[in-house]
Image 1: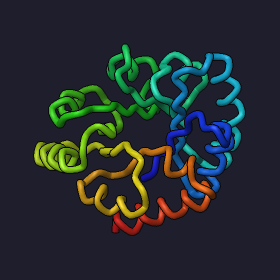
Image 2: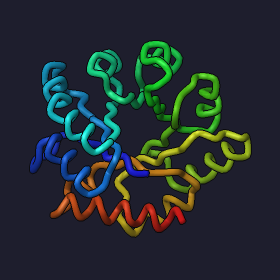
Image 3: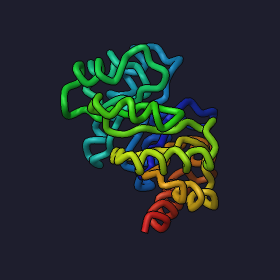
Image 4: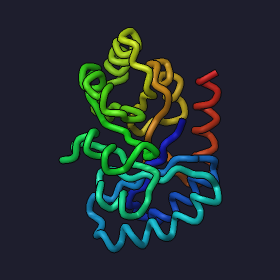
Length: 196
């Protein structure tokens, strides 16, 4: 599974990057717009929603809980948010996708009763530590998908998948590529090959 983190880029707009990632086969866009004004986020979502519907692409956002609810996004990725996973589930109802960033296995286990859909490990957690945490979680019967966030190149993907995660979330390798569409295709192929 690939989550493309769409964020401000010197070369392309967020909408352009999202479209290219989708053209490359990515089916999950995460908007990372911490400094964008609410009205700009609304305009961006308005622009992306038809394309996401047409291609059955999931559209979520980091934090911005109230806006995500207002705009009818598929869900939210909580990263150091003031909102708890329990609060967000109550706000969004059962259909929304809720992900939560964690740094250690015990934090993930504490979320078991919160009705979330996945957890993610940030780039600050090295792969060796992710592997240890994933093993601890699986031994504890933690069954939710686990995502590694980072800027993983094609050659790094097998090592990332070897940690036991179910997917990756990244921005830079796609957004800085000479051809973001082709790069997305390569990353997805590497993920699919490694998952077999």
